[in-house]
Image (cartoon, rainbow, N blue to C red; front, side):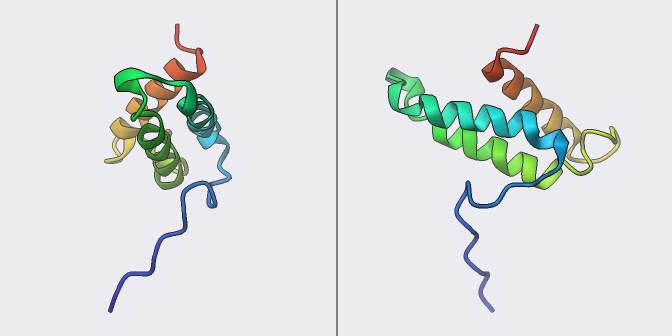
Length: 89
């Protein structure tokens, strides 16, 4: 039995409010991608995809439960999103 083809990124997004920050950062990166030059030029889309996928997979649980396996990944994604969104101190 083969796995179904996953929906393209951007067509499915979680509606959990905790995912908003990561989704906003992903959108910011995708908007900036065409204007990036040098070594950063190729990073915008993969990082944006990672932020969206992390939001989809973990927004419902990881932010609230430190003992869950995804909590550290969630914290990393949140730190990256805050740096992109300019909301990190």
